[in-house]
Image 1: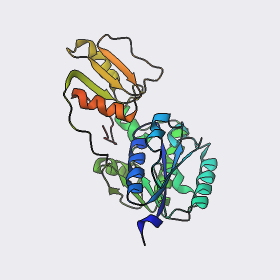
Image 2: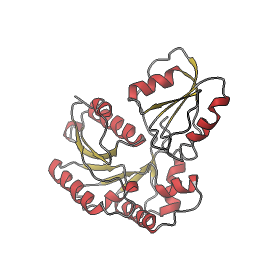
Image 3: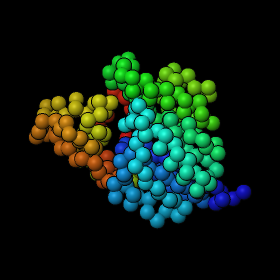
Image 4: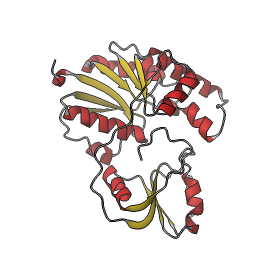
Length: 273
């Protein structure tokens, strides 16, 4: 059977590294003759994010308002999400569903399902705060993650460390496989400038970028940080430049020009930067 006859359905979100992973994978699959329907959940993608997928042969994007599971720990939106995702599957009739989430594997799928176990709140909590969250809503979240891993035909992780963490926390019935994240070829080298670069959500404890912000004034070179600042903006520091969220091409240009890249993360299961 020709790969051109194969259709995949893949879920993603536009909040962090999952978008880069899913959109890159979708483009690569389409370049090899596959048809991919990319279903976004959570906040809608920005126009610059969607622009990278425009006019890709074989690639469709469906934008939903379904809540991400880590933004809906009690699972209030889960019944609607499972029903809507299953409806998309019935309509497009894929041969495989690739979920970049956990609980959505609990839908009544009619085709094999693979879970991409990139991160989870329990492993995030242990790395950033120690122990497990105590609120009941997070217990429900953990139950749904475990149930999703049971329901999936297979699950994968981007590193052996993350796979082992998922195994230890949720005891899934299958061992999981490690598949490293892939990216498009990096642009050609460029002359380096005298500045320090970092990237990530400033408000995310896992990225630990507030530590970098706190010492920026002591550094000889300016520090440029790309990523969502959120509402908890660090005090103004003359040596610190918060760039906000950048289009992918601009982020790559930042990395190309920086002499030093800093990642002070407490928890970085993805490792894309």
